[in-house]
Structure formats: C-alpha cells, structure tokens
Length: 275
Ligand SMILES: [Ca+2]
Ligand SMILES: [Ca+2]
Image (cartoon, rainbow, N blue to C red; front, side):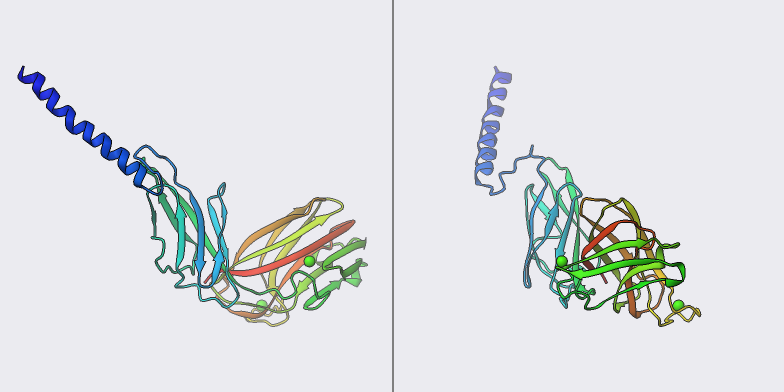
C-alpha cells in the first residue's frame, strides 16, 4: 500500500513537469526543446553601418562587406539563430579586426561554430573595369616576342594571346598602387574565364620601390596559381603582408604570359579582411 501511494505521489509532479515543458515549448520564440539539434545562424546583420552578412551554411562562414573606411574594431552585430544561445552575444560590440568565431548552442547540448570575416577598405580601383583601362597597366616582354591584344572595353578586361611568352611574367596585367600594410590580412578575389584551360599566377609585389632594401625593387610578397576554365568563376585567396614592412606602392598582378587563346578577367578586388 505504502509503495503504491509512493508511486502515485511521484506521478503527479512528473505530469506537472510535462505540462511545464509543453508550456515552455509553446512560449519560446525559437521553439527549442531539450531534444532540438538545430544550431544555425540564420542572419548576421549590422545596423550601423547597415550591412548584411553573407552566410555560407556549407562552409560555416559568414562574410560581411563593410563600406571602405569602416572602423571594424567595435561593431555591434545582430545575430539571429536557431538553438538556445549564441556566443559572443548578439547585440554586443565585438572586435572584428581578425576573423571571429560565433558559436550557436542547440537544445540537445551540441554546438556549431561559424567564422565571421568582416571585409573593409577596397584597395583596387576600377576593379570592375567600368572605367576601361583607368588604374590598370599591362606589359609584354618584347625580348621574348610575347604579344597579345588587350581590350579594356564593355566593362571587362580581355586578352587574346597572339604569341605566347616564355615565362608567365612575359605578359601581365597589374593594378596601380595598392597600399599594403605589414601584418594586415587581405582577401583577393576576381572573376575569370579562358577559352583554353590555362594556369595563371596572381601575386602582390613591390612595384618599383625597394621598401625592404634587398636591392630588388620588384620583390614578390605572395603569389598563387589558378587554373582558369571556360566557365566564368570567382577565384579567392587570402594574403597576409608578413614581410615586416609597409608597401604603399605595391601592385596586384596577373601573370598571363603562358596562356593561350582568350582570357577574360573582371571584378578584381583586394580588401582588408583582418587588421
Ligand atoms: Ca565589369
Ligand atoms: Ca625589395
């Protein structure tokens, strides 16, 4: 009898708890219960300056492109998410001067991190070629017979190789000065296509001023290789100025001397991604 009563007496609180959980579930705006595994950041925005982050749910990355000149060391994001919490908190000023991790916790205790990168300060002028050749240089190494027809028209850059160079630098396209600061991380991106799949080289180098006093006025700070195909794609890489020097007259360069056929480049960008 006593045991029966005891069992019965324990049932009542359990029932009450179930009602309480049900009530919480209905009342909670996120709809999260203890079993929910949802942990997605669904929006990452800023009110000042007004900016919406681009979420890549597969890569778990969020890129935010701020207007040039934005001070990125104390920005206040509004973070919308599923799950029960996000850390750091939404609505709290955060230093975005290096890529930041925001982690969402799900109702079931699991968590998911996103890397937030705030991009500011575009260094490439006329990167969309809307002003033709303005702020761009092209050069062919006549000594190797490299020749090409370059067209800066219709808001894009096109080159038709008429005689291939010996080296990839025998024909190139470069920006005018980009102001590169020591220790700063940049994101370089561009759209490109080629009639024949070809490897091109993209780099940042000293453009005539020997800022590191090594006797070479064209020291290369960084370079990357990309195989360009017939379908236009966006290519992206990160570059950190690790040389220990500022180079206010550096250039971003595309080495095209080993390509054949017809190459098109557009939407060239080099932005500060971390200070
Ligand atoms: Ca364009
Ligand atoms: Ca040098």
